Every structure is written in structure tokens, then in C-alpha cells.
Image (cartoon, each protein chain N blue to C red):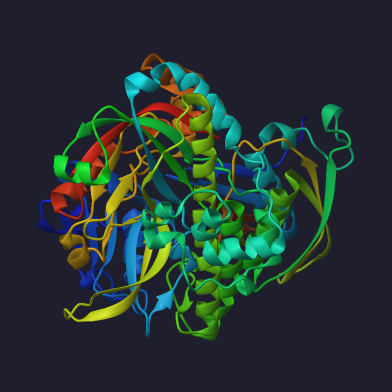
Length: 468
Length: 152
């Protein structure tokens, strides 16, 4: 059933709702955070149909949500937040995504752009050497079986114990860089094989490392708390659980196909594949997914160590504390209010959405060459969005359309003319990630700020981009 | 008269991922073409110049042959599970696969040898083969097709 503009009821300036009676299988309404200006972008693909599909899942609480950076995914929309009852709801690997715990980490230096400027080309080369990017370039950390089990069960904590960081790092990571329910026995040999040489690599696609400068401070008080100041040089990392997480998700979506028949779950799209959270299959996936999440945190922790090493070598100053590390593809058990205002345990699926608890930093990377934003969660996120906010700019244009319109070489030149250093493995891959292919991240952030589901703190702009 | 070569696949629009339509005169051929399409997305230039009998120039000696045996519920899930199996090999072997010779092929089982070439890198990192919109169907006698969405 096609969704038209008039099917959306406006609740306030930045919030629309598709009522429960829009489609007979909906169990809850579906909510959309967006501005009038951006609204049309949602009708260009199947985002809203996919959102309505998630509102039809058994056990869904209150409403399913998409953020302003939403776009069509497969099964769940990207930019989606769907909370399920822990006691009677479902868990869906597709609602978490193949790149389990894909996320963003920001490191801050104590130096200004003027101090770093002349060393920037060397710094970029050194980071590029220390942190393999692209597909097929292996990492430098190879672990034996028992160490790898520790990566899966203890995440960033294990990496810190191995000397790749210090204890203070863990306080600045969502869930302290470890999901405690992890059980390596639930992970296939194939997933382990794929992980073998991928720790410490960023991969390809929209993943990157950027050297950035703080360009604008919106809230002095909050910025000060996070140790951010205008002109400061920072490093942002965007990557996830690589082939390991992809395999865990693939394995379980396959298993859940059968589980759907077993538990007689009928959903509008196979890729929504889900099983009761309390079932054997549901628990097994939760334990394996937690291994994937821990792998990703280990990955970002090891990459951090490699960036610090590069920084130390080039700038004789290796101290790059973590501002924060957030996941934007993950499932979390949290306590939130249900439709009756009662506090219950829910499993929050965040697929292309960021946890944004009150006072917690929220990191929103822009598309390549554009600004990134630091926000902070509010009490309103706890009431309205299961403690969640947006995760990025959000794609607008397909990869093939972007390649037809933009040449990688031209884009590289354009960025370089703005003084941005670009180090990329593939120039055609570069074109696909062109800023024109994305929504304007400033618009996206204005919506979540305006809606009160995260407050703007600072804006960062890139000095150098490293991509696969 | 030049005989028209039937199209193996075409690329459709998708906002963030890769959506394809794959074709074949039978389910078996559709599976073979889907494997080719996946390799093509990963590394078009290498896949275009590779055939089982002939791997040319600098690719000589980099041939990879693996065995796959996948069982599943129906053609739709079998197609995805088969390609996911190939993708796992692709990642662990750093190889792109371009052809398959089936020893056994039915609605529930695909078993055979897949042929590929080792590569230094990939043009595109396919994270996963999704079940989204997959429907292996005969649109007219002797013409099969399915949509496929790769997570990128």
C-alpha cells in the first residue's frame, strides 16, 4: 500500500505520525522525525513502507520510529528505532543490521589547527600506514583462539588490558565497550575465519578516519565538559565489526527463516526475520550479536591505539583521549516507558540510530568532506525515542546515480581545493560517497535539535579524509 | 546473423545498497548468473575477463576452486544462502568468484564447485546478501528472474 503525504498526521514542527489504523496489521503507530523541508525525501524510496512493516511486528512497544536521516534499507529502514518487549517481543538480526555495532568514536587532541597544519600530510600518511582501509587489506593484529575469545566476550576491555589504551578510555565508550551477554559458542567457525585478519581495519564504503577541527561551538558549557574548544584538532573513526559481524548476522538471519515457521511468525518482508527474544534461537542470536558488538569495540580500540601511535610519531604527542564512542547498529536491553507510562525492560533495536541518553555525547558524522556534529542527549529522548537520536547524514541518492553524476577524480580535486587532504583506495568508491549523494547533515541535526531529542554542542569540519 | 547473448543481470536503483535483477533460462542458470553478478559487483574488470577454462595474463596461477553444498527451504532462500556461502569464501580467500559447476541442483539443495580468482583488493565490499525482495520466479516459459539486494 502506497503511503502518501496526507497519511502522515503532523504532531509538531518536527514530528509526524502514521496512525495505527493506516494498515490493518499495524500494532502501534509509526513516527517520523523530520522537517517540512526534508519531508519529500522520504517519499522517494520505500523508507515509510519499511517503517510501517516494523510497526506490525509482535511485541513492538509504543511506536516504531525513524530519524531525519532515514532511508530505505532491506527489511528495517535505516535510521530506525524499534523497541520490543523483552518478555513477549521479538529480536530481529535485520533490525540491528549486518554491520553489528558499526559506530563512531571521536578522539580529541590538545593542539590547535595552526599547530598541526604543517604536519598534516605526514600524519595522514602515517595513519594510512598504521590502519589498513579498503577491502582485502588485512590488519596487523593476529590473535590466537583464546585471545580471540576474549575479544568476543570482553571487547574494548580486553584491548585495554593488552596495552591498546588505558582504563580511562572505557568510561568514554557506550556500555564501556563491552556487551556482557556474549557467548563465543554461538559464533560459527566461518565468522571466526572471516575475523582472522580484520581487527584494526576500517573497511570500505562509508567507513573512514577523519582528522577534523572544531569549527563552531554551540553550547560553551557542554563543550567545556567534553573538553572541546574552537580550533582544536580531533580524529573521528567510523567503522564496525567488519566481516565477522556480517557473518554473525548472515548466519542468524538464515536460522531465523526457519524459526519464523516454527514460531508461526508472519511478517511482511523476509528480511525482517525475527524470533521471540525468550526462545532458544533468540537467546543464541543475542549472545552471538554481543560477540559482534564486542569485536567492533575491540576494533575501534585497536585503531585508536594505532592512531595514537601515528600521532605520537609525527607530532611527538600521543595523548588523544576519547571524547566518546557510540554504536549506531545495535540491540540493547534498556528500561523505558511503555504506552501506559509504565517502566519496562525493552530490547531497543537501533539500526542507523544512536543511543542518546540524557547527558551522553552523541556523535553524528557527516558525509565525506562535510561537517560532523557533537550533540548531547536530553531527558526528552528518554520519554520520546527510547533514548535514541539520529546517526548521520543519511543517503539520498543511489550509488549508481552518484557515479553517473560525479567523477571520483573531480571530487577529490574539489575537496583538495578546499584544503582537505584525501587519501582513498578507490576513486570510484569516492564518487559514491560524494556529499551530493547524502542529505545535508546540518539539516538532519537541526531536526533532532529542534525536536529536542539531542542538543547541539559543537560542529567539526574535516582537514583530512582517509577512506578505503 | 549475430546471436544475441542473453543478459545475465542488470543493476537497479537502491538508495544505499545494491539492487539487481538476475536472469536465467532455468533456476540453475539464474543461480550461476547471480554468482557472476556478485563477483562483478566486487571486481568487474577481473570477473569480465575470467572463464573457467581460461584465466589470462597476470591472473594465471591465482585461480581458486572451492566446494559449496547448501541446503535450504526453497529457491528464494537457497539463492541467498548459496551466495552468502560464496561471499564467505570470497572474504576469507580474498577472491572473487565468477562461475559454478553444479553437481547437484534442486529447489532445496545446491552443491558444486565454484571458480574464482585471488585479488589484491575489491572494488566494493559486499557486507551481505539479503533476503529482501528475493523471489525466484518463471515470468514466462524458459525465462526466470529474481531481484537481489546486497548490503554495502
